[in-house]
Length: 333
Image 1 (cartoon, one colour):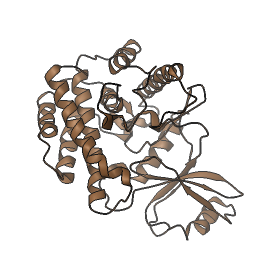
Image 2 (cartoon, helix red, strand yellow):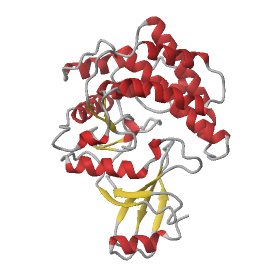
Image 3 (tube, helix red, strand yellow):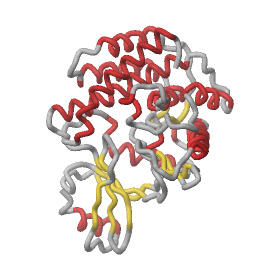
Image 4 (spheres, one colour):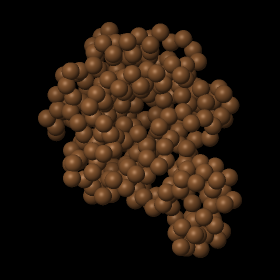
């Protein structure tokens, strides 16, 4: 797959790329990420997953443009974009290079050297970073051109519902009923901000003392309602009492972390955004996470992905639907 890459990089970077070393990063469920290095450089390469092109989330050209726009806007907590290749003949798909940010990524296995104080600080730091993103200036920076905020919430509800139907493999009435509820409860008013759309611990690079150094995986970033971003984060934010399958994405459930209620309270304390409809945004986040898992599971069932972790994602879909229904019935996050 990478035979043509050294010559391409030598030509476009103006650097000799002899003895190019390529190593896949573990842990991702969607787009593929590799460390690539030689004597002249050390970068990260991003490309879409193998198999069917199932959504705009795999648009490498757009993700590269997001990073360029953020750089122009003066944002620094991200990898610096280096090079975009739209020629699919080089590695079989469009790809881009970005800076490699050194630090720690907190995935779903508890490190022995971390404790409650680390996770309390990481909870606060992650929300501070999310709030900073939501407060970026949009007009002068050019970020506003990345999305269409008018009608964003309704479009997202309809869009994710349609994606689920296209990727559906099993009958899950809880999830389908949750989508019906969402369509009937779209808030009349919403704010406008730059949003990441996939903000969770394993998309953050942090220091040994829980300072967030960089945010990763910008493929779904756009301009829209910031509480849609918060809702997605809440959906990934498992608590100790949640079913185990919903704990596979984050260590947000270990001692020291915010609860979901505390997360909402912290966000509210530092912004002026109306949080009265947060249940809607949480249920939306659960439905969105369910569809993302369903799309990957469908690709696994079709034979386009062989990662054994994908075999259980149908259980994530089911659990998200059940959690959404429980939250609606009990009016709680």
